[in-house]
Image (cartoon, rainbow, N blue to C red; front, side, top):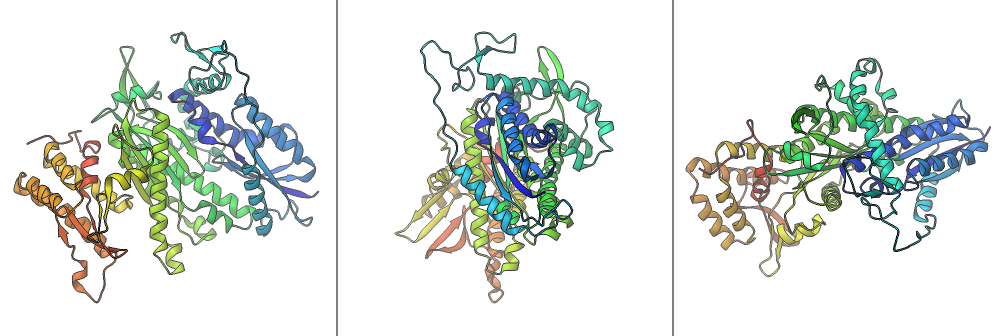
Length: 579
């Protein structure tokens, strides 16, 4: 029987998951979509007794080989399941590509299907660009809108008996039910982990979201022995995890150039291996970071002490992670996820498939707990985009193709939210951190973002040492004001005046940070014919960083140091006080 390829792609994932600002509905939506993608797609074929081959189903996408005569029933059932379980709010787009008649069950996995896979990709892009028409909902002044999303009409009251006077739409109610289901099953999942340990990652890949998360945590020896451990009830509970300000950290990680790499994989078998290895690497990297920095803590609920995870996973799978943590741990978690993914994803199986080095970019936003989550998510996405652009620009400077393939595009960007923060980080960077003086042919960058992992690790360690030396927030604030002048006159004068207020050891340390990062930047473009090219040229608080468009460029790491000072804790949780 002739075979066909069927590709699925879940529509508007982030709009569905982050359609409300309430943690329980975000988690419920994420878990629901994850199950629809990983389990229900394949189950739809099983229920209809259709012969399929699951190439991959994760990260919101799916690729299947299906008997041509059964395609219509299969795709209709998948779409029906999406609509039914999400109450009409989630949908999936599909595309079909027939395969040559000589392709059979025996050789389908190893066949070179480059042309067919490319055609399938463009068919899916075309269908995604021409979605079905949406009918407007009827309007009436006596119809109540959902208390959560504010878009759909309310149908039922709250599932929480303590919550009165609120009414929710069918979609939000379904998200809440899913969150309650997971909450009630976490203790059972932890109890059953002993039997899960004999399973491999291939079997676990089809588990529900929190079953997979807990399995990977257990593999990394995360302490799950506490009875009754739970997730945070809402964002307000993150106050009890805070080690500095009442801030949370939103981490958004996404792998680079996945589409480009997948396009080079010409057989279903290669794509199956690649999808599995990347999905496993992203889960492992996340579990390692959680094990290292986010142990279970006790908080007070209803007057009693209860064990709680000091984080929450909002999305994970494919090549994406969205998670929320205590702000003081967010940068360390982001750094660990990025570096461990780089190691895990470039394993032997991946290297046999592609010569391109896999890497991850991360955007981190540190914001007050009460900050609107919708804006927070937009900022994290913008910070991530800035990091990806920085990695792409650096890669463009590499001319040799082998060096381009081996290029490490891992970059980490962050934004600390204040009252007037712009949701677009690129605009924030241009307005706050960059200044171009065309008359004097000068260009200033008051930040080194986005950071390479090695540079960010140095910065975080430098901040911890700054805490030990008690640099003091007042003097750091004065130095910040000097840097923001972004020139070589008042900026330098005010910077040197602040520098003189520190003790000699503190002063030497602060200046050393400028020289250290300046030297690292210089060494990246050092000239073997010029021995002094490795020595940084420093005009405190700036170091020279070559030229750009005939302008002399000056940069500093100190503003990043100052902005993160309250969000990186040393042992004992002391952030450093005035001397």
